[in-house]
Image (tube, rainbow, N blue to C red):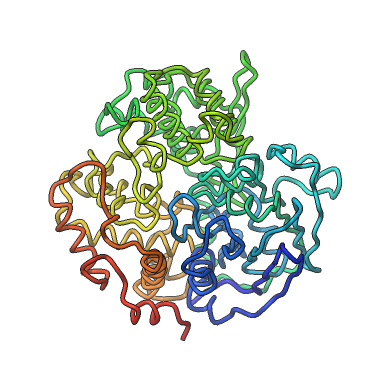
Length: 556
């Protein structure tokens, strides 16, 4: 089975030391990316650790496909104990960081401890250097990039950076790279901020020797990406907004309505009208990114994508694409997840009857980043602030919902309920089956197996690492087998092990099936959750037995 190569570099930022070790066994069992980072986190982070404490560990990791020149592979993984969900959570980001990371010779870099001084940590193929940067306290993401460029000749594609939100412990703070690409969900930026690390840089020319098989498949994927006329190449994920709004449900005004009357002003055509050039991720010919600007206001950003249009648009009652672009840019500047941030802002607007007030939205985003005034409460997220705001808790396991409404897509609703990461649409992406008409969106009965298959495939995808937009469009089961030199069922079993280790970690922190719930009712939900547990081989209460956890955690 194809897997990443390279050492584990453990960096203790408290005593400013670094060590390397061989993790060939773990890589061979978990491939790389999310898989190996989850296995390491499960083994190395104490089950009772504080997400903001010294004992939490933050992992950056790549997979074997970052050694290829195939489209859809310009991504990498980040994993830690999440301050938002209180479990192990992973996120991946695009851009150009992954190839620079691979050049250091490491497959995984692990941060532990807490520094007394704000640090920039420089990881190269020659070692690790620590630079105290107190002058960068509360600096924005782009300001950090400018300083690192001036001092060291480093570009945005070399950096993993936090903004003020990460320093201030906002529970949904991101780690940013390439200035506008985010390790988005779960508050991983707050973990890096708690360690008092402002940025980690990666550069080198010592990539391990990984020979990705099936050159014909790689060439075919790359050619198909380059010649595709898919609308995503013009509009990114926003291409489906009006379709979803008209035919399913696009949550509006903090989930109180199911469609938005001004959708044409914030949909794919509106975004495309502001796009001024093409953009991509490393070696990817699909080029679906969205550099946008508005000449009249001077607002310039990358995006917004569908989820940001939902969270800061319809869910806030804001019907002007330029206002949403501004919200997007503020989140990138300060380092925050646009989904969680937009949702908690929408909750505030609901509690104060201020829907549609874009000026207030922008003010709240800034206050959240610096935990000023009401921003201090909102920085805690919806689950921890909804009672004081006087609104319903639209989140699962502490994570705010994505746009794809489980009240319309019942299989996706089941996925939200059982996902270890909570209200995240990328964990299972059952929504794609229901939007596409392959599966009737009504009802949850009989969908547990589909949710599991999607979860396992996506964990495999995140271990590879390969972009979601390539999976299912360019890379299906037969191409997975060719690229990873393994039977597809065996590959899915790697994904199953990752999901089970994530669940076991949550169990050891005191959580069981009682948290697998939604803020709304769905047909047959409880019986479908029970079927999910049974098919997973878990206990009836949604827990993983110690024997199963031990079997899944250990490399052969």
